[in-house]
Image 1 (cartoon, one colour):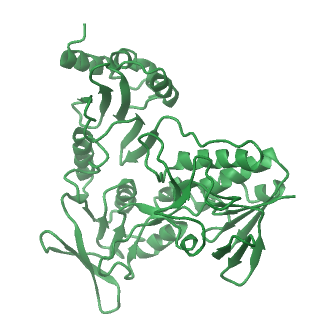
Image 2 (tube, rainbow, N blue to C red):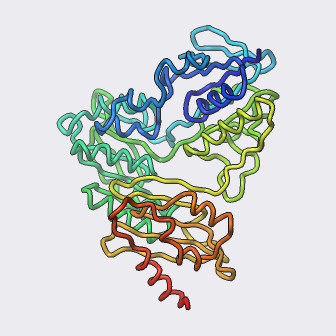
Amino acid sequence: MEHIVIIGNGISGVTAARHIRKLSNHKITIISAETEHFFSRTALMYIYMGHMKYEHTKPYEDWFWKKNRINLIFGFVKNIETKSNTLYFENGDTLQYDKLIISTGSKSNKFGWKGQDLEGVLGLYSKQDVDLLETLAPNKEVCKHAVIVGGGLIGVELAEMLHTRKIPVTFLVREDHFWDNVLPVGDAKMISRHILSHGIDLRLKSNLKEIQSDDNGRVNAVIIEETGEVIKCNLVGLTPGVSPNIDMIKQTNIETDQGVLVNRFLETNIENVYAIGDCAQQREPIGHRKAIEAVWYTGRMMGETVAQTICGNKMKYNPGHWFNSAKFFNIEYQTYGWVFPEPKESNKHFHWKHEDDSKCITIEYEKNSNQFLGINTFGIRMKHDIFDRWLTEKRSADYVMEHLREANFDPEFYKTFESEILNSYSVQFKMI
């Protein structure tokens, strides 16, 4: 019986384990040094906000793993010896494998700022980060002011979390507008205004210079690079993105770059060793996708794909059309296909924004052919399967605009805006 060992119990590793069990009778072991059981990482923020308890974030009951003959080891792997197929643990234990799946996820970025390792500085990625946040910022009396550095999805989540406990937040974002390295300027400006409307002190074009400490080695201020301004604070959230968690892998003969290098079959340079999820880096990026994608659904898809290969049905990783979703305080965001901050050379953007400044869409399409390439939608829910089909069918932007109502996924009795959007599009592009 083959022994399949998976390092990491996030969505990628657990999906691989579940599908290997569905397809085979292999012995399966999952190793994690973060938590004993799999939990939904995207739900971490709701624990701090009081909407959920930790046990509510576990999709499977604790008995699920034994029932499905999936062994769990709570421990830290410090080395992998691929010639003898041996894992070495920090506590001195060893474990043999026949096939190994590396699924070690991400870690929060740090860029060498002075004071970045002080007490009171944290990221927002792991269960331990949320536990630490609960200790450092239980209320506005203990944490009188927080500073967040980095304007991505994790940064805005942390701002919302602290805001629910009425803790004043200064949010340092180096871009001209929030997340405008990803969003077109109209989208980014609207989200910037929305963040400000919640009382967040959003500082655009602002970089961190250093973090200062008190006499006890605890955070008490940050200094802004551009102005030298000193902002007093008790907590600093470093959220300038994440990078593959592969420090241990770099010490082995498994090839790495920023992540663990894999081919389309998610194979590394070592036979019977695979990498999936946030820590995997495609040797050849797929289409417009980045070589490393720290996205929940791509991790799940990689887990499903590698399970097929390990169980004898060798399969290429094929993530299909790009999509993603997030939430900026009260505004839900979805994206399908490709909408770049600036349209590609042969493309154009159409942008519509509602007068209430909480709903907008931007579509990107090819100028000459009018082919629809992608959509960002804010404050209006759309159906994934409809846009996935339209992208596959290479529908025109005109077609998408005329049939937009079919894609609406807002609850019953919600006001709809498709007629207004189509009218704006028709006027702008003189559709007949």
